[in-house]
Image 1 (cartoon, helix red, strand yellow):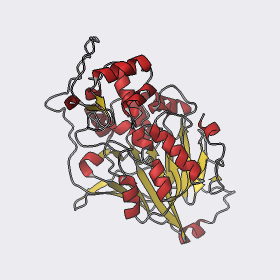
Image 2 (tube, one colour):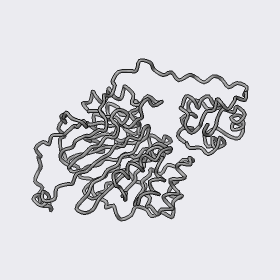
Image 3 (cartoon, helix red, strand yellow):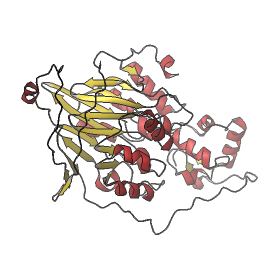
Image 4 (cartoon, helix red, strand yellow):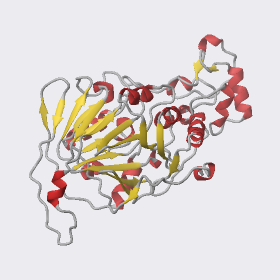
Length: 414
């Protein structure tokens, strides 16, 4: 386990204070669309109804003397990956939290954080160790002063994961594996951990799920959690209600079930995906479910970086671009060919190179012994330093590596 690999790291520094999970019963009004550029959706505050509690120790009059500062939640446009920056302050103290770190083959998250004048990050929470979520963690730790890194405890053999562990240790960042039921007050922000209760054999469904409460406004993040993860959260009885939902698994139809949406009841739903990505994200089934639920949907492929700004009572949504998310199927649906039975291996010219670090899921299936299941694992374990590194894929041993080399189309670069 990862804890054993990082024995030199201290568990959970004293910057976080454990707090009880007391949830209010605030009803979220439906936002109205405000015309203008950038497009803004603003939630209208409703009259607050509260019940007098005899043992309340905080004077409400004192609370109003110190209203919450503006909090910005940046759903960063990082292509077919995920990265979200949360920044806010309390008095003279500034806070920054990053949920996921973008893809491994880019530095766009580092650049974006620098453009926002971020120098210190209190927590980097990596929902799961796939390369499109943990990808730039090492670069971020090496560039910024990161106090704490959260992971779910799952390990992989990818170079991206190894680089992340080395950066944590070399920079003396604290390491923590959050557990279901953990609730932390990080300044005025409440962070509740909802998933996973235990690790399964499914990396996506092992994603850490986090609910944020800032005043009366709430946010939910579920990484690449799919129907199994959503069902587990529903069964747990946890408070899933959120005004703003980051749509699970880049808008895949395997996530964001009707039952889950009925519990979350989001006013705003935001997914992160690249334009014309090979997976077809967001899937039309997901968009239809979201629109049926009444949520207003934003996507980084259409709107660019999406920023939600809130004072804890109202919120507005700002986008880099204006656009419309299609809710009809594309004219042509890509059909993934069924791989033919393995044939006698014939050398192929280098002109037919399949770059194992960048080729699509369909393209890598041209490589001998790489079928649909292994193609997904191949992509998840990127990057590779050599073709021999394909041995990290389950079922690819020395004999099959020899076949791949003989076939001659797998390459690094080219």
